[in-house]
Image 1 (tube, rainbow, N blue to C red):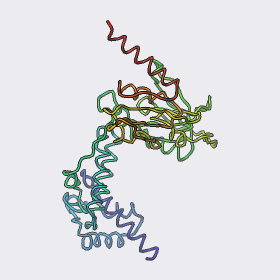
Image 2 (image 1 turned 90 degrees about the vertical axis):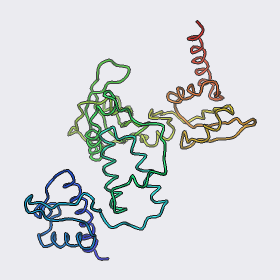
Image 3 (image 1 turned 180 degrees about the vertical axis):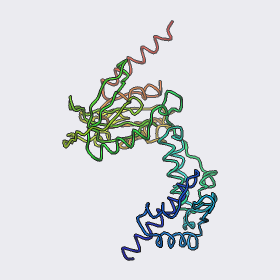
Image 4 (image 1 turned 90 degrees about the horizontal axis):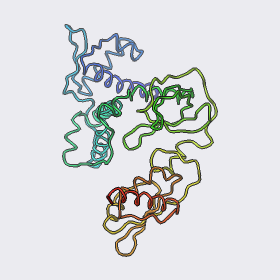
Length: 337
């Protein structure tokens, strides 16, 4: 396949998506728009449109009164590909992974992109037809109330941070941490964005303290990209540090094993879930279970351990064992009166 042929096929794929996206909400597209969008002449646009209509069987018509091309709302993106049941299972998994985030702006855009890609792969936008028999349940989803993640312009912040990371530019913003009643000004060299438990975080180096820190999208406001560029990378990249994190907190110290033993009543539930990508699980006599988590901070794992109540015991490290025991004693005191 020659370069010109590949370029033509790529342009046709893009033209199909452009027509669908621009016209589905009442937008108007004419031949000049397509010429400008794809930087080709009129003859090429008309030839591509004939290919889309005749060979791809996409219902695209010229509406003289609206002076725009009209795409039938039931029109296929492309002819269906030969997909197997397992392929639809994967697509269904992706859709259900995204579904809990429909309440956020960024989630809605991801779902819209999924719908478009599903159409290109299968020839139909009706992905619901493939999800009626299989259900994936996810424990975490973002808050959808007025004070949750939807309050933040997630998509705008995501795009802004993506550009800043790509162009290696410092960002400035106001940040309200749980420990402070009023926001503080921040100047950060951003390195990574990550989602954890349905919430978006970004990681960057403070230009003043040179400390690598996580920041929650929901607590940042007034962010802007500055002309200031940065060249220095952190000694350890956030992606590397997160491999020993239980959540979003970065621990800079060496990793250590958090060793937990679960009673038989909780063992089955524990081993059914991957709690950490590098966890180790071993069955013990009497139906009990040992779980080893390689972490470099106990800040986020401690509340999780307490959530298991009397069905878990901390074996190591000793400091965590004593901290959990102290919390349990204080909890008991709350009910002693």
